[in-house]
Every structure is written in structure tokens, then in C-alpha cells.
Image (cartoon, rainbow, N blue to C red; front, side, top):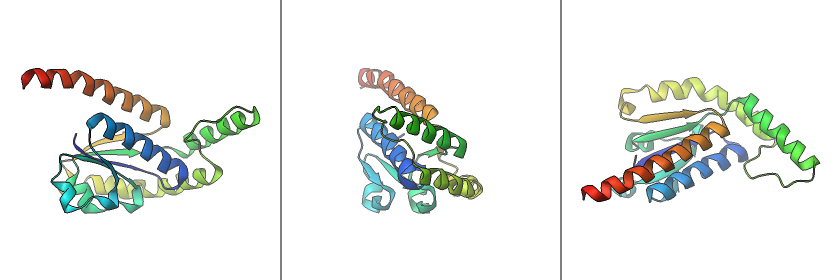
Length: 164
């Protein structure tokens, strides 16, 4: 996992989660975190990168040059529940955490669902058969997966150092 595309729904909530996931992966992998539009032929030859994009803004060349795709596909119900929790936190006077959705994010989540069949077809293209795809369906699942990747990579680093 050296060239990773993190993709999710448009809007502030989806963008915040894409950036959160990409930053954590990039930090752990020791590679830069860039928007998918900044991945160029010069970047393809580099030691690696983590790119972020909304699902509808993905370019096929970026997907072809990636080795891993992380799809943050949060269900509208999950986004709605997070919105209600955010309302409760705001009403109680507590500081709501970053990455809480607004009402527009629920709409964006519904629109993201419209991209689902297209993205499933895209990921089944023979040209993208090399991709390892992680399909994450909630913020909790995303945090769990990121934690597991950080833990797995920590365990692999000492073994690689001993082999060298």
C-alpha cells in the first residue's frame, strides 16, 4: 500500500472524513497527502502518495496508478444519525467534534448513493483489477480500519528493518 486513493461523498462531512483518513494513512506510510487532481506523471514515479477525491471527481488515470482504493461510503442513515448526535451535543452546550455533518451533508449522502452503481462498475473494470479496495460504510468502521492499519504497519516496520 504505497499509492492510495481515498474517496467519499462530496460536501463538508465527506471531505472532512476523506482528509482525516488520508492524513492518517499518509502520516503512517510516510508519503505525501495530495488532492487527486495533483497526482501527475511525476508523482506516479515517486515513492508513494495518498490522494483524496469526491467519488464523482475521480479520474481514471489516478485510479490506474493507485494500488489501493479506500471508499468511504457512509449510508444516509448513518450520516443522519451523526447529524442528530451533533444537534444533541450543540444543544447540551458541549463542543461538537470535527467531522460532524450538517443538514446539507445528509442530502450529499443521498446523492452519493446515486454514484454507488457507477463506482461498483468502475471498480470492476479489468484496467482496475490491480486495486485492493476497502469499502468502509460508517465513521466508526473507518476509524477502526485506520487504527488497524496503523497497528499493522507498526508491526511490519520492525520486521522490515531486521530483514534489511
